[in-house]
Length: 301
Image (cartoon, rainbow, N blue to C red):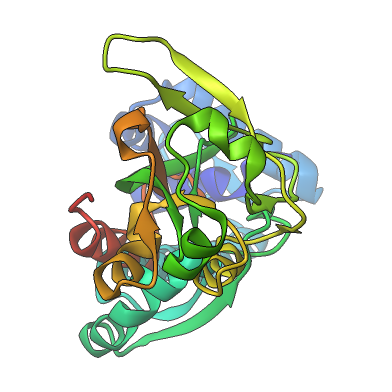
C-alpha cells in the first residue's frame, strides 16, 4: 500500500511553496523525487492537480479540492496521534485487565487494590483469578501475575518478588502421622501435589550446603490445580505441602502450619513476575500497575 499520508505532505508543501525545488529543500528530498510523488498522485487520480510552467506553478480546480481534503486528513491523523500520545504519557486511565494466580491475588494483589485505585481513580480494573497459564493476547489481558519459571515468548516480564519454598504440615497431622526426620521419610506420608502439567512428583532436598540437591519422590491421595487449595488442605491436616513461604507465612505465624525438614531445605525460591505484552512505550495504565506492584512486593521472604 502506498504511503498516502506521506504523499499528501509532499503535495501540500509543493502547493504552499509554489515550487518543486523549494518544497524539496524543506522536505530534504530531491526535486526529481518530489516530481515523481506528484506524478504518482495524478496518475492514480486520473487528473492533473498542478499546472506547471518554467517560471510558475498553480493548482487546478481538482488540485484545490485535493489540497483542502489533504490538509483535513493530515490534521485528523495528527489529532489521533496526539490523543494516543497524551493517553500513554499522561494520567493513567481506561480499562486495565489483570489476571493473577489465586495465592498471589490473596496475599499481594487484592490487599493493595484499594490503595492503587485511590491513587489512579481513572483506571477501571477488570480482575480475574486463575492458576492456569493464559494467553495474554487471546484472552485480552494487559498484565498477568505469575509464579514459577517463565517460558520463552515474545512477552515482557518484570520480576516482582521471590520467596523461598518451605515444607509444612499442620500440628494435628504431625501428631497423627509423626514428624518426618529425613526427606526419605516422606515416602510414608501423604504429600499434597498439583495436577497441572508443569508440576512435579518430586521435591528437592539437600543433606548439607555443600551436598548436591536430590529429588525425593512424593506420593499422596490428593492432587489439586492451585496453591490456595493445597494450603487449605494442609491447614485441615490432610497432608504435607511444599509451597512458597509468602503463601503460608501467616499460617506459620499463627501456628496453623509448622515448617518441617528445614535443615534439608535447598533454599530454592519461587519467582513472581508481572507478564505483559512488550512495547517500547507501555500504555500508562499498564506501567502504573506494574510499577505499583513492584514497589509493594519488592521485599523477599
